Image 1 (tube, rainbow, N blue to C red):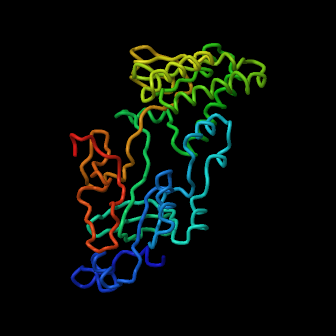
Image 2 (cartoon, rainbow, N blue to C red):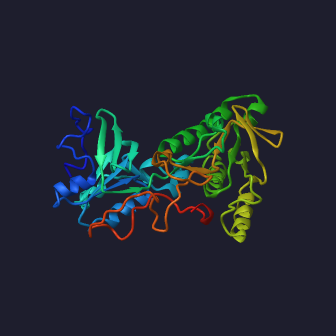
Image 3 (cartoon, rainbow, N blue to C red):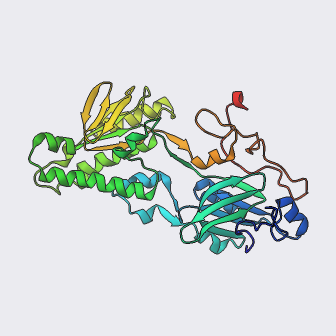
Length: 352
């Protein structure tokens, strides 16, 4: 794996790569026909880890790059945010994969450049600086980020839940609200502190709302003297006609009934107009809240923009039926995989 990462190409007098660093991967393969193909995976989430494990028996050098050194079990992250689980319960070191997979190397770095023509990546790592990572095949599995639908200013007062750090920050925010409510004497301020608003009624919003409600009614109920946590107000907002809009309508109804039994108020077809330190404004009406959490919408990782490839309105890269970028070159050698590496979700038929 020693040649899977290299410094920037050394240049000759005419600013062209020297013989020590071939201009292209094709030249490198021709110069070293015995070299194993190099497969680079960006992202250590479910897709990236699955791709790495699927290649464990391949005759290739595999490198997995992620800016974090741990894999997050995303479905249980909401339990970290509500103090049900500790961060270590939902995170596992990515590097432990390399212990059992001899052809795998793990890199803690952030990808800042993608050059499909030269088949190389530019990565940056604290204390190391910028380096060049050549590849024969590239698998992009960078995951997603929260989308505020063009209102990024909401992020200051409505944190999202995508990382371990997000989970810890939200946990602190929730528990601090109860602690402050115990101390204040103003009834209006106490009510504001005990009001939680979640924007977005997808799986994360539904799970988080239910977990906060159960924690307030059961776990925290006898822990305070001046407040009754069971009287906490929890409001779940969504712009769709029902919660869990991507699920079957029967499941949506059952989830809504369960949330209502837990004391969660559901507001559908409700679009948030403003989020600030005092709460949210929905359809011209303000809901006073000290804790607003953003559980609505996701957007593709910014790294996909580095491909300069065609994308749909949501920012997802348009790919071929083989999940490759249409402009991706293919080697003509017999070592070429039958399918090109995955880069993104397929585009709607109208955009192909």
